[in-house]
Image (tube, rainbow, N blue to C red; front, top):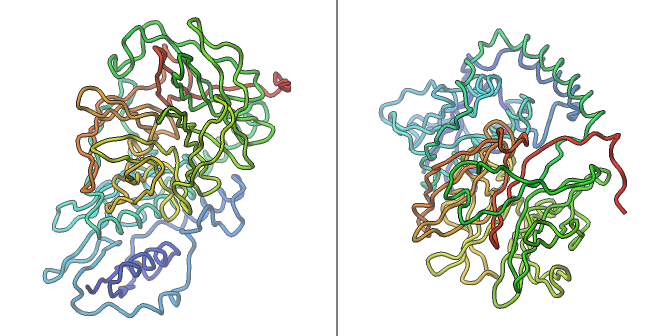
Length: 502
């Protein structure tokens, strides 16, 4: 198939080269239409990006993360010939292609075309809905995300990366839609879209905010997460769909570290809670565990797995009479399986399930005669939380095969796992992270309506926010075992109150 990419020849970016490379890998014949488009992002945006580069310590060439916003010369497109008169498909990034004899895919952000539309959504604090439309019908869609809210340049580049993922997914018929979301009670109306003329004002406000943030970070460890726990009494959050009236008790820490990603397991009659144990002075986390009795934790979490790289999300489960763990190790580019030889410690690596992949929060479930692994993947750069990939295997040890429709979902509001998938009757209920406001800001409960090699579909039924009954600033993970339920969220810990843990 002959594909023509319509882009603005006055503003060629590394993003366009990356997109062309990914499309070329599909085996199609590519060409480019580089006529000037007009209506690109205003010149004042360059000043904003430069200011953010200085304030946030981004590389001095303005290339945060993967540098997809970097301007490149028009000559960089020389390997691609000019668009033929009648290509089989035009991918329109500018919104100005009006051909009747050729298939045209228009790429839009919140209903408008072009980079200016994407940047306007970012500056308005929105979660952009990207759509690929043909003759007014959406053939692929995704909510774009970033872990760098408040930094326009970083957000812009993350979302350009995921735009490329969406286009490539559309070529295989994946990412056809995103689920509707219930609105949390605390949510207000989104702010209005700013005009390009307001960018200078926003840059000044960004500077003022950054000064406040610098003072904040001099005084506090941020973020500082905390774990909440309670006895369910037979009614968990999957039943209540709201915080319990009794509220939550907190797992104490000493301020020099925080605990997050709680995963409990009932093994041989003993409930044990595994957590990410993040030591502020080291800037990395290990996996620790603490036993629970009828009244709560019996002591403090003690280290059980410490590796040279950051570990989190200790997905533990029992199988074949033994306890297994799949901790997140995206800093190592792997998903690894460990077995406990001296529970809750003595962990030895049994297998590498996936390699060469930046996968977050790997979550396993057995369904339909197969094992499934859910994880968000930093696919071609971009955010860590908005592109859901699946793998299947005959056994949890592998071998794991990627789903043919990966990414099966692009949605910053419901892609990233937030705990074990639970079965209620014939239904699978999946905790998900709603990262529209920021990473881990809210917790969703999604019902998986379809899961097989054809695809995965889910319906987000509930979104839970922090509030009076959970005073943390975020709500991030949900797990239960042995009559206890656990969540986590972020708090603050003053640096001057830290003490070194023995």
